Length: 58
Image 1: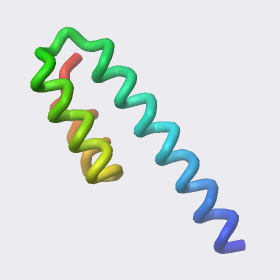
Image 2 (image 1 turned 180 degrees about the vertical axis):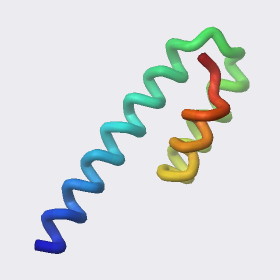
Image 3 (image 1 turned 135 degrees about the horizontal axis):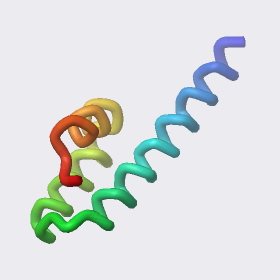
């Protein structure tokens, strides 16, 4: 059962990260800020997603 839970968690994290990246690209932030947020989300998937949710461009 452990591998199924891990796989589902990974899939959920992937979907949330893709959603966050799409939202960053669609935001009105400057290009530099967009690149910074995308790199942060890609390099630190969980922490980057949480930081983007609370501090990212709207």
